[in-house]
Image (cartoon, rainbow, N blue to C red; front, side, top):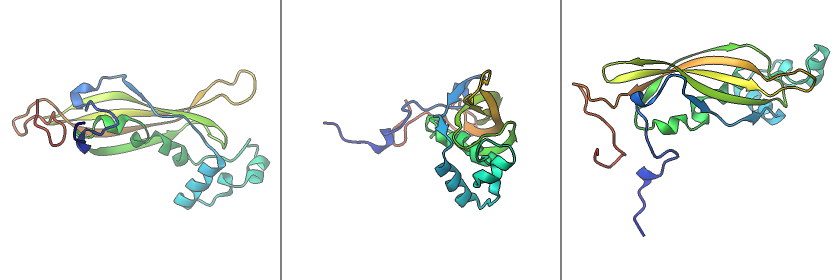
Length: 182
């Protein structure tokens, strides 16, 4: 039996660098049903005590079918860390630079959402590059004829990644932690 090497224990064995990403590339994040437990956890973490997020009778009196999700409650499900994306770039990620959001359609308790990330821009630098990701959240259709899935939220985030191409400042870092470059 071979000796265990923790550096090789990865969710995604092949690491990716700035040059490895392509425009239009899509990264699916697992779907989630927005249960009342998710609502309770978000309310406790955020401190948002508006009744639209926890009082079903308040919502119904205002014509809503269920509790209304806070925009950020839905947005957190598009975090790059909630899918395989960050595991692809463990060695190359410098950091996340910015994020902006638009909350386009409501998400209610018991809705199922389908988050995904899409590469929309690649900006090369000298030794790093910026990958811009569009975050999208699709909602499953609600009951009723003609109800199609729709985009509920859209946001963009930028991540700086190390380039695998040699630069005058830095040698390439295409290697697994603890192992020499090939």
